[in-house]
Length: 343
Image (tube, rainbow, N blue to C red; front, side, top):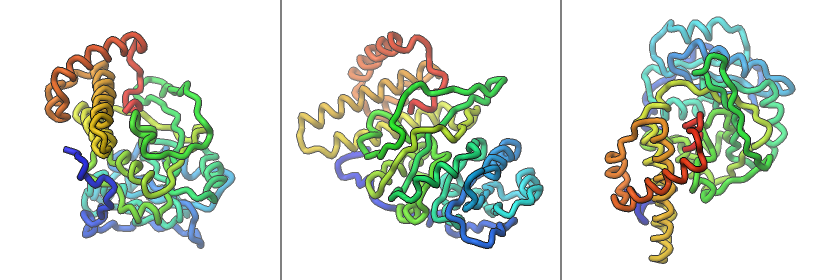
């Protein structure tokens, strides 16, 4: 359990766990210069969608000081992904294959170890970037930014026509985050389309596999403590594809709730006032119960499991659940279609 002695911001070497696993370079880029930006794509057995992702990275206009790396976490040689990469004849592309599957965190970290650019744009292997993405990005890279989040435009690949789901909320065009911004909600979303200063990422020692499934949120929270984290709210230049995959697994979604509760506890556990501590803890429980209610609108949530996992007082839990359920039904007449973006 998280308590006041928890050193949440401690920097731990997350590269060490996979340091002995080699990555074989199968295709080498040939630009003749060191790029300022590397578009880094982690992949695992998703050749059909990966092609769309690579094509969106290749077809950038108005900016050419970049390269592309694909790091394949499938050690099998001559697989569909390798055949796909071999079909390209593009000097920007480098392709690496890990000799062992090193997990999500390990593969994400390997991107930054292999990237040549001063900045690294992480792009999921089923997502797309607009043709002017790097051109817009280049207008702010001169600023002192350690992490730059992108505003995502969501499309649901589970529907027959890849339906776009547009956000109706209005934001400032450029906003700097601090740790408190993440108390009520995960504003970062998935790290796809996020631009990292490579030296800063290496300083923080990468993503932690111990924080799955919120390893990205965990990193962003630490990043707000050690550096400058901004979000480019407008325009939406990254297309985030919703698929039926591990992120929609019930245990994974319950993991989001549990980890977010843990991160919020840091606020209440690190204040000296007994009264303020109790108030913050109550707010934390209430917000977490709203998360659970929201989740239960889509899935058969194991409330007993979450109660035991989170150690929330049972009577408070049941009371909060029913009160928040009424609130939820009043203001949300039907469940939101994009579950993952609430947490």
